[in-house]
Image 1 (spheres, rainbow, N blue to C red):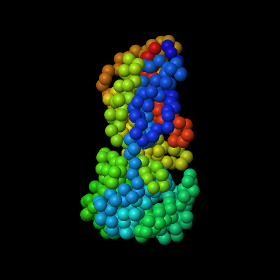
Image 2 (tube, one colour):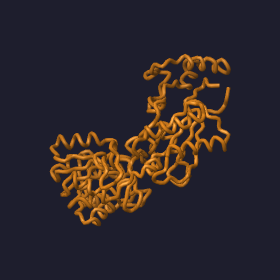
Image 3 (cartoon, rainbow, N blue to C red):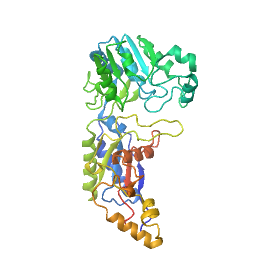
Image 4 (cartoon, one colour):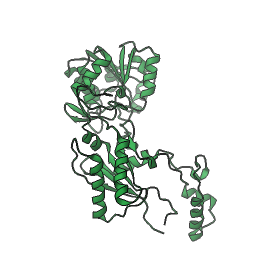
Length: 397
């Protein structure tokens, strides 16, 4: 019985530039790693490449002027409401700047006590002490300051109320900030609202339409087609974008399934094994200290090969050891558990007590989170991740 299970390796790659063949570079980098590290490819090895280098190779960028042109064409350029943006200089500051460049006035509705991904404007305990109900109470900036003063983000040291106000005004637009969790608050103020939330955007747009808002957009409705030669994303628009320069954003990459399939084919042909591949972005996990949920991209993986579809179908070893085979130990216990695992069929184990406590998340969310934690977001220089043994279980020799 072998002792090594899943092995995850970060693979270094050249610095990717616009126009590079990302599939070929990924495959070549992995094959170089095979040779350098003496890796023997196996069936169902997984190769993943981060979305940022895919988008860079595609040249999927837009300037703030190009985004502003799309915003103005779709909103009319008067007073524009922006609902539930996340508190992020990297993710949202240039998008807000573009909206302000396209508008006479921008009314931002900030959710509180935190944004959608867990960046806190105010601590829940302070809300309780002040007698503020975030589900019903809408606050002006004056109300918020009177109750809580100035609160800085614990990681960035930024007061996002002041920061977003200053961004809007620096573009020549009038700024108004409100704090509340009822998106309908914006409907009497403006005919055009951009729902800037990510994972709850469908509900936000539905509520706005039901409340009679005339122009309802999400970030996924902007930059869905080229504007003056810009990049675009037909499926996600501005969702998943990041600050590239002071005047441009990198959009979420396009055609990621095709990229993944080409990587898999190149490596499968080279190795004679069935290699799976995916493009990954933010992992789906929460920081227990800062309370920030990492997933600011619309999905963890925008493209992957078919073998990575679905969810795990696993038995809980400790349940079997403590319950079904509680009277066994040593080789007898190992043999009994091995036989139970091998007896699994393709039928779902959801609801089976022996599967209780396993995580029924999408494989691409689990693997993508593993990849994001491995590659990090700084200077490791490993935008490619190589995983072996992920689909193994206790029975594999």
